[in-house]
Length: 157
Image 1 (tube, helix red, strand yellow):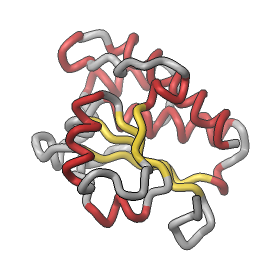
Image 2: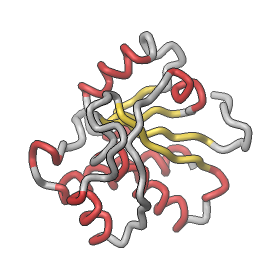
Image 3: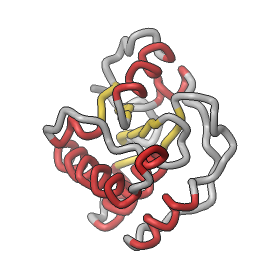
């Protein structure tokens, strides 16, 4: 796969339903892992939503608290909907669950460049990342995301 962006960095784009819980957690966890390994110059990492429901909102407060409890730095941000241009600029589009995959298939007209995957598939687990919006268990979500991010980084490094 050729790199799409100007800086010769691999661009990883994390996607969840609203971009206020799982995908921004994945973005911040992955950025922290990359920074700790001294690989900042190799990756561009971002996150977006598969739907418009939460566009404009910051990271959900319980997700912020979970990141802070694990000493993962994060900044104020606004949820945004993934566009076709975002798809084209990303090297990897990594979704949190099966529903996200369906939404992304529609947004990209079937993933013509075969960039879309589900996060835990990278870790050899064919299941969704637990959605804390419904479970209330942000720690379980953190564990799922960290496991997936470690696998992504291992496979791409």
